[in-house]
Length: 236
Image (spheres, rainbow, N blue to C red):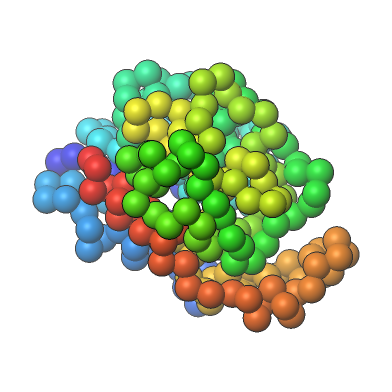
């Protein structure tokens, strides 16, 4: 049977896992009801094995608390697989770490953002390319999304289209090929998950001049960002 695979690249904080589930559960919860007939949802933990499931029809690459610039062996081993997936036109959607890893695999550079960490529910704006994109084009020109990242795509791979940006990050969403996208934000997050991340990062956010209490107050539902997941699998 054909498989939509969630490529697991890390674990959420323990309190998030206990209360809301790990990254793969957050995605599964959003995707299960929209899966096409004949497609199963599988998880490939790339940290534990380099052998992917068989009969993959699409892949979603999760976030991680690792850093792409660390070039961990399991992460580096994913790069040739992603390169082949792009060459084969396998539908891909990278999220946060997955976004940064895809960009690095395809010839870009991902590293620490000079402005520091971006966390909370933030506004994201489509570019002209985003407004014309088959995955993003039905979204509002400006929408809110949940974000938590210290690294970002600092240099684009050749031939990449920028689909969305905001005041912190010029590369909030990218497209690399006909059916290969990535986003810096977390479409799988719910408001309680976002609040848990802000609470965990409270000291670090305060140290860089952010107001954690205001960030918590500003957390909101992100239906447009979340809709990208079901739109992605609807295009399979």
